[in-house]
Length: 159
Image 1: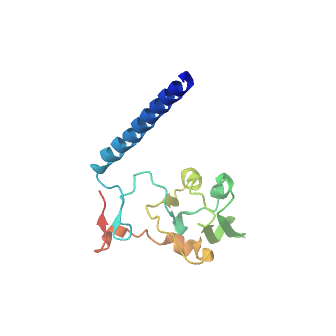
Image 2: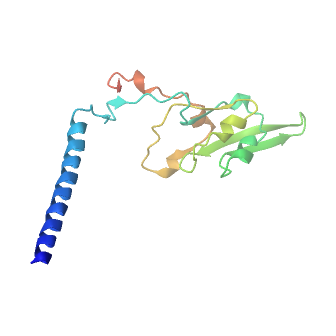
Image 3: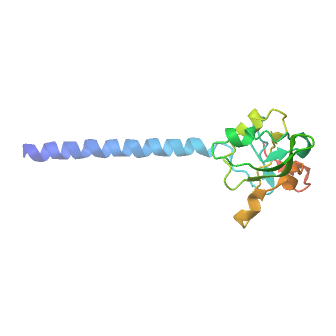
């Protein structure tokens, strides 16, 4: 008889404890009801990127001195630099410069260590494509000025 009373007592204590935990969960849920939504309706609303955002890399062909520092500091040796050595002026001449953004980790080392500042990070983050080979940007695509998505009349800034 005494065991039955102890087991009934333990059962009731555990039931009250479980009900208290469920009640605490409901209180947390009710507290979140009053909060405003954080979700952004992406194609129509866009978040403002921070000042130090690392987006697509912009390349200025005329400033490049073909020192290849960007290739040496890149953790994955990503920038591909093709050049010719011109004997008459004893300088390297840049033929082609490309970066594959499908592989790039956007660390920013190439931008930070470039001695002539021919590389810069933009706020452009919409790099989605259907074919991964389209993410291999040459100097023409890298030299394209970044598109400001807030210039689109259909897009509003999310607060």
